[in-house]
Length: 471
Ligand code: NAD
Image 1 (cartoon, rainbow, N blue to C red):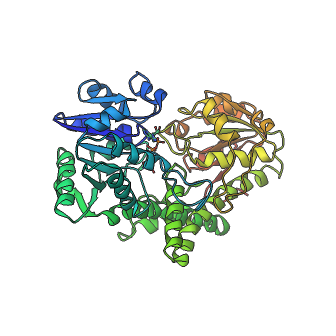
Image 2: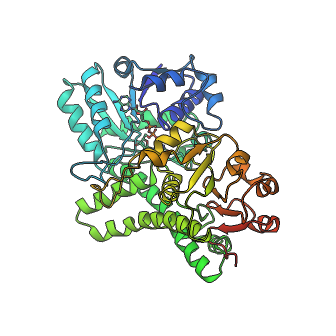
Image 3: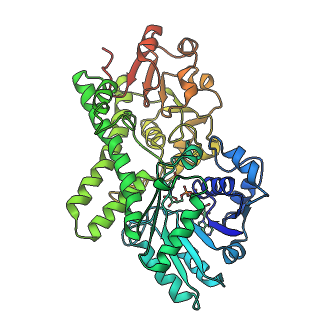
C-alpha cells in the first residue's frame, strides 16, 4: 500500500488529503500538524474548517485510510510521498519584508524530513511558494539526508475556499512539475498515478519545476487582476451612470474574456491573492524587472482603493458623520461558504468605520466573536510601508458587538452594510429590517447581492457597488 503523509492540516492539506483518501482506497493518507488543537478538531465531530461537503468525506474515510496525527516525524518517516502544505505568509520583517514569502515553516519541514527519513521519498510542494523554491529545498534535503534520495515535485493547489470539495473532485487541471531527469520523470509518474484514480489523464499537466511553481503565482495574480479590473470599472460606472453589472455582462460575453470572476465588490480578500501577488512583485524586483513589479502592484492598490472608496461612500452618504451611529455589518468572512477571515475586506472596512467612531453590530453565520475581535484588534500590516504598523486601540474594540442574527444586528441601526455574499442575505425580510432601523435607513451593498430597486421601494437609501447612485 502506498503511504502518503501531508505536513500541514490547514485549508489546503485537510480537504486535499481527504479527497485523495476518498478516491484512493488503496492509499493510506496521514495528515500531520504541529498544532494539537487543529489535529484534535480533525479527529472530532467539529472539523476545524467549514467547507461544504467536507464533513461527509472526512467521516467516510477517517479511521479507514485517512488519519490525522501530531506524530509528525513517525508518519513522515513511513511515507513514500510527503506533501508539504504548510503556510507561506508574507514576511513581516527583514529582507523582503512586506512582499517576500516567509519560508520559515517550509524550511523547518524540509529539515525535519531530511532528519527523520530512512528511505527515499518524493517530496511534493503543495504550498504556494516562490519560483525556484524547489532548488532551495533540494539543497536542504541533500545536504542533510545521510545519502537518502529525494525527488522534489511542484504540485500547486488551485482549489478555492467555499468550493474546495467540488474543485478537488472536478479540477480544471492538476499541475505537476518535476526535474527532467529519469528519476524526476519517475516521480512525476508516481504522483500522476495517485491523481489518475479520478482525474482524466488529459487534465493532468506536467511541466518543469519552475513552470509549475510560477503558474500558481500567475494564476492567482490573473484572478485578482480580473477583480481589480472590474472594481476599477465600478468607480467609473458610479461616476458616469453606467451599471457595472451590465458592463461586466457585455464584456464577459466576448468569448476571449468570458463571464467568470467579473463581479464587482468591495474588494478581494483571503489568505492568497494579496500574498501571492506581493510575492510575485518581489520576485520581479529581484530579477531586475521593476516595471513588471509595478504592473502587479497596481492590482493590490486598486483593491485597497476600493475598500477605502466604500468606507468613504458610507460616511459621506450618512451626512459625513457616523460618530456613535450604529452600523450593522452583515458578513465578515472573505467570501461565502467559508469561516475564513484572513485578509477579508471586512477588516479594513470595519476599521475604517471604527476610526470614524461608529458602533458596529456584526453578524456572520460562520465566524465566531473571538475571531472577529481578534481580527479587529490586530495591527494592520502596510505592505507598501512595512515599518508602519498601525495598532488598534483597545477602546475601539469596545465599539464592536458580535451578534448571531441579521435582525438583531440591524435593530436600531442607521446603516446596514453587506460585506460577504452569504445566500441568506438575499432572502432576509428587509421590510421587517427597515421598520426596526433608524430613518433614513441606508443599505451599503458591498457584494451586490440585494435587489436595490426592491429595497428602495421599501424606503431604504441604497448604495450598490458600481450602480447608479440614489439622488
Ligand atoms: P493554513 O495556515 O490553514 O495551514 C497550514 C498548517 O501548517 C497549519 O495548521 C500549521 O500549523 C501547519 N504547519 C506549519 N509548519 C508546520 C510543520 N513544520 N510541521 C507540521 N505542521 C506545520 O494554510 P492553508 O490555507 O492550508 O495554506 C497552505 C498553503 O497552501 C499556503 O502556501 C497557501 O498559499 C497555499 N494555498 C492556499 C489556498 C487556500 O485557499 N487557503 C489555496 C491554494 C493554495
